[in-house]
Image 1 (cartoon, rainbow, N blue to C red):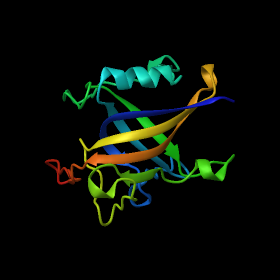
Image 2: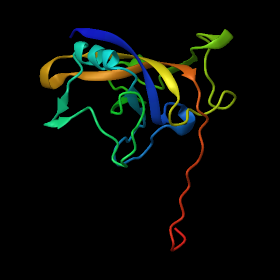
Image 3: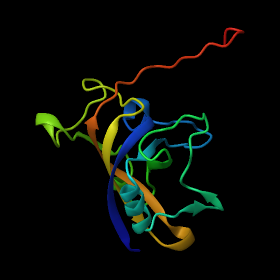
Length: 165
């Protein structure tokens, strides 16, 4: 099975990429998943994604999404969902959180800590590295590394409806 590594620059939304905020919904990800919406910065980044063999559709639905809330989004205004399983049943090193590092200033390449450096808020600018593997209907991808270029601090958006819930 051939694989291609692709790097792209863009912006994150709903980044759950640390063990402390992993997506652990048992209905969809019984062993957990690290994922985020990734808004590509430029059309060149989008072209690099397609050139890597990343599938444009999955079961007839476009992988390139437009925000549902009517907002403009970031970068080119459209996103793809990048993900990595917490547990990979085939190869242990293909599971677990992606590597998150500093990608600016005097700490380039040093590990990023959600506790001390902060959680990645919507609009944080990053450089990502992912692997695309397989072909045709059997093409998959795995988020490998995230380099934080410009942090937008995470802010909670707890919403309370009229009835108190």
